[in-house]
Length: 350
Image (cartoon, rainbow, N blue to C red; front, side, top):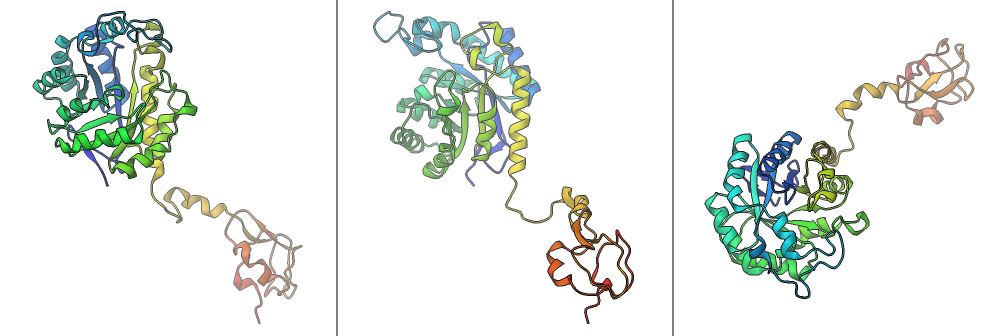
């Protein structure tokens, strides 16, 4: 069973799903709001809060050249530099956010976007690293994170099999021993029909890693379904209120929705159970109300049992319905009144 361990929590398909609340830029430039998001994630039942560690200058250039303005989608018309400057989490916040996580009892880690971010997070004793989908092809960054020896959680949005294989190989070659791959569709929001969740099981077998889902769909349906396909990790963006706005608000969950997700993915995991055709403990009281053979008309001693005086009905205290053919035409050993469960001692078998 492939597993990873983040901050003392074992993560695998045979353990309850590990839920990550992604704050991203939904703090809306307020440290107090970032704290409130962490509190909301903890109250909702999430296992971890994930941050993003970059600045506009470490992720792009402040220019208007072709390619530096988003041409379609949720952020159409926005300059990359301006968008990332708005959405980034100030590095001066990182220590207070990690300390707040320890204070309220929720794991905090981050996606670094360059080597300087890794250095900062190492100083904060980050327990794991997340490689974002857009950075998965940055193999030097993957290697830098892997070299820390911390668990790596890698999102696979936009990547083909070759690129995923290259990232996994780079991580392993650089020393990573605990790797999780998150199936991801980098649409914002991602249409459900694009999700192809069956890929999750293939990721697990093809790359021999722990797997999960980084989910940008609206709602929680895809996240719950992913658990049935082996997802051990579910990551979802969190906002306090979508109407507050923010770079990622449109495809983020509100706190009550995150609480529902946490509950339902764990219910789904418990419901998977094991292959079992036996009687379940919750069914024991119901057995008495299955169908069985009953005498439905008064029968006198010596009178044969027929379809007119024996029927399969509820409750289940009589002989099983499968015995009906062996009983028909045989005489009663004694008088039997209507409503009597049929048993072998009532039948003359001689």
